[in-house]
Image (cartoon, rainbow, N blue to C red; front, top):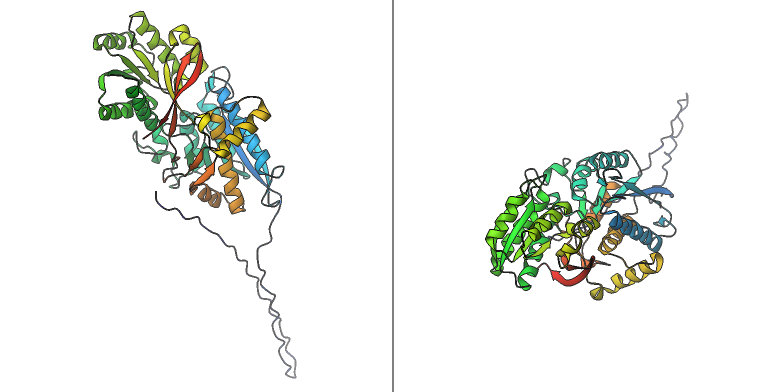
Length: 422
């Protein structure tokens, strides 16, 4: 890890010098000494400045429950870490606003809603930080817009590889046109999840794995990583195919799985509907291979769509086992359950951590300065939070990469294993 140094800013205000004029007279008179006012020791502090934090999250659709968890966690953090919204001894008055980037009719986030949110935030002179977006596709829309104003972004969930690292053409440079990165995330990128999935599959005895991915980049990342890691562990890749946009080639893919005699299917993608169609067709063809997928399977659309056929399906997700929480993590879990009457999910942890990073940086900087705040956040080092101890790397990615292995049992996802990335 490259050692990171926090920048310190000092503002020195210099008073002007007032010279007294002398008025000429017929007889010479002594010139009075100039009056010099003393230098002030510091610029007067303006108190009560608005420090606005936005969240851009889908409040309808398959990720609505996770968004609610994040919103709950943000409010809890503000309650615990500020004096009724006051920060820096009254310099800042915190204002938190939740924006919906989903369209209820579409049933998910939309480009139009995310663009509108980003432009609204950009136009707000009091906007200092954004929690979100939740979805990687939404992040790709918002990032280049918010980069223009240098507003710090922390996503609790966006995990597309190219948001922070070179992947597809122009990734990630297209999101940082101003040349300075302003995006960080607390969910590890999907390539790390794919590698963890391969190790889990190997531990479960998988021998011949057929990999199926979306044609989108969100599927290619974990698929590539799974295949690379499988080669290290000795598993055989029986085949690899991509489901087209309308899943029109699904019958061909399933026939190839059947011919390959694979004992394991790994689904890498963001669309749970395609995973449902794949599973149904495979079972229709009497293919008994076990199925594992990315966290895209862990939503209501997959569980309801697949029904009883999904019994025993596995999926990976970012998370920390509840029985292995850090002391701060356990304290947060108790406080969250006490306030909201439910145990926090992984999104609640990352949502709480995201706004905690913003608040910590605000207290350290105590200036209404987007550049200073962003630098303080990006240089987060050995942060001791509810996720454990971690840092942001030079790309803006979290150094922690633990994953959960989850198994579907009678329509409910159950924690089956904790999967460190390496």
